[in-house]
Amino acid sequence: MLLIADHLAKRFPNGVEALADLSFALNDGDFVSLLGPSGCGKSTALRLIAGLLAPDGGAVTFLPATPQMGFVFQEPTLMPWADALTNARLPLDLQHVKRGDANARAQAALARVGLKGFEQALPRELSGGMKMRVSIARALCSFSGAARPKLLLLDEPFAALDEITRTALNDDLLRLWREDGLTILFVTHSVAESCYLSERVLVLTPRPGRLADDIALPQQGERAPGFRLSPLFLDCQRRVSDALGGAA
Image (cartoon, rainbow, N blue to C red; front, side):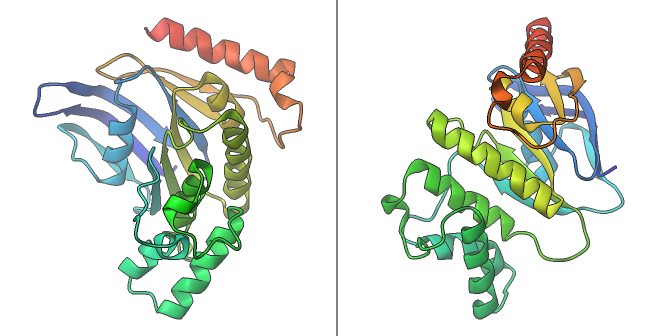
């Protein structure tokens, strides 16, 4: 087990109760999607796990210790004045890694997300999908080669992208998950995306968010080109859609 979210609650100063009594666990190596209606506290849950917010109730416990963490936001949040290499290198600069080593690691991360040759490009010169690839490369640079587990948190990173780009990034994310032994918690509004990516889908109720269902999906292995039309995929969508409808 990697982490336990135990009875998490969060109320904001404006009186909005985002989460109430949310509990779930993640195992090392899981790919889990967090699914629910708008405003149900999915993004809040991610920020509580990352330590960007403090809970008003409950706790997040890491076992046996806090993993390395990378965070990909819904918007790429790139520095507009900096090129792709500098944006990807940011976590390494904050860790005071030597510039030569940091550049090499950032270049490798950009190559892994399909941006070899775009190291000097500014954000305004990149498409939306390419900006998101830089953001993912930056998250990869948060991880060192240490033995500690690696937790990647993604907050609806592909929501604003066209379907072709979104599909390609889904496949890239699955490849990185397998190659790097990541644990991934992925926030999405899309039933299809959650079923394509995940081993488990956590379905939340409308605000304040509580866990309505924890759905284990069949081991799906490699995604063949026609997987989205397969009976297995369609059945997974039906199960998750039923749970989402029942949570309303």
